[in-house]
Every structure is written in structure tokens, then in C-alpha cells.
Amino acid sequence: MRDVAIIGAGELGGALAHILARRNAAFEIRLIDETGRVAAGKALDITQAAPIEGFAARLSGSTDVSKAAGASVLVIADRFGGAEWQGEDGLLLLRQILNVGAGAIVVCAGASQRELIERGVRELHVERQRLFGSAPEGLAGAVRAMVALETNGSARDVALAVLGVPPSQIVIAWEDATIAGFAMTRVLDEPSRRRINGRAAALWPPGPYTLASAAATVIEALIGRSRRLATCFVAPDDSAGRRTRTAALPVRLGPAGIIDVVLPPLSVKERVSLDNAMLL
Figure 1 (tube, rainbow, N blue to C red):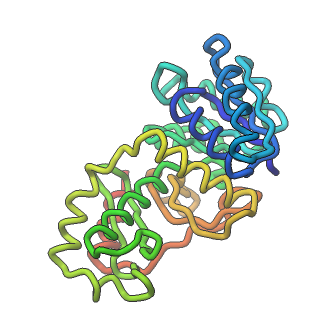
Figure 2: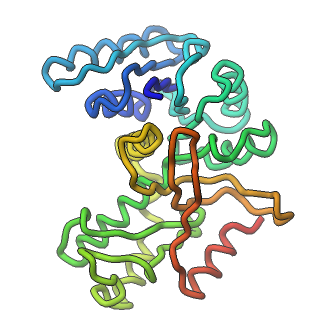
């Protein structure tokens, strides 16, 4: 469960490979990019840092998507010198890697890949449990940092969920949020919470390193190194006959992908906002 293939050796893909290696979160990391020897060069550069940073992960680089075969986690990142994989190109890539890595979990690490996840589930019939996006975890981390600044505390002490469809329909679950074990609604007054709500949209999209850190956090949960919940783009469940769209939701992860969607208690206003965000 600890072989990871990253498709795209751009800023995001390269940073993710380095973070996973430094955390020893994977035995083998395969960096794949269609541009020349870029992936191989970045893999070599990271490998040369191993004696200094003390990690033992094996890294390799290739231009061939078929090299992703056998990896238990496939990550769709960004092209070298280009944008994140999305649109028709992204869907074509997703179809390729699904053929190569049948049964693998696919994590879309980019901030612009929400629609790719939705199309993959609806058009390619991938199970929503094994195709999802990690970018919202980066947004949630940024909101926690903003709350910590507002309260003159530490982001490590802040526990809150960020839901919805960023950047225009972000829902912060204040009702269940805490800081150092105290209810957020008692620590942070209403004007401050509204101010943070108003600023949250400007935090999207997160930068490449934040996105890479978010993807690494999700991968660590997938391989069992962490039990923490993660905020991910989750494709809609149309089985109830109600068509909705992919949205950021807190999830519990395991070796098979998404185990469960864990919605926090929401106020009436937050619930209505989330419903509106998810409706087509």
C-alpha cells in the first residue's frame, strides 16, 4: 500500500514527491511527466538529498504513464511548465491511468480538478470512494491558520471543518469548531467569525506547496499512518435520485479510499449554505 505514482512533475508534483520522501510515507515514489527527462532529473535531485534528510524512499522518474502500473495510490498533479491536469486532457489521462492501475486509489491533488473528479465518477464510472481530491485540506489548513492569528493562538489547537465549493461557496462549520478544547463560538465573537468567512475565498486556490502538503496528509491517512479526518473533494452520490455536485467534505480514509463522509453538526444557516453549494 506504500507505492505512489505522481502524474506530473510540475511545482506541485515535485513538491509532493519530496514531502512524501522526507516523511518516509512511501517505499517507492514514481514521478511521471511527458516532458523530456524532467521527472527523472527531479527524482535524482530528491534522492541525492536522502543522506542529508534521512529518508529511505526509492524515487524514479519516467515519461511513460504505464510506469504507474502496480502503484496503490495514483496522484494527478500538474505538468512541468504547465497547468494542472483538467478538462478533456485530464479526463483522457484519467482514463489511461485507470487502465494501467486498475483498482488503485486516485487522488487529484490540484485545486482546479473538482470537475475532473465529478466527470470521472459520472462518465467513467469510477467508484467515488477511490477517486477524490485533496486540495480542500489545504484550504482548511489556511482557515485554521487565520483563526489562530485572530485568537493569538496556535493553528495546531484549532479544530474546524471547511465544506462547500470554493471559492464562492465556502462553508465554515463554526458550530462544532474548537480551539484548545474550547468551543470556538465562545472564544471568537460573531464579527470576527464573519470577517474570517469573508476572507476565506481569497485563500483559494492554495499554492503548490500547500497543495502538496495537503495531498501528503491524505496519502498518509490512506496508508494508515494517520487516523485524522481530511477535507476532500468528494463526488456526489446520485443513488438517492438527487443530483448534486462534487464538494469539499470531511472524510475518514483507509486502504480502500473513502471509508465515510463525516459531516459535523451545522447550524441551520450553515446547512442551508452547504445544500445550496451542492445543488446543481
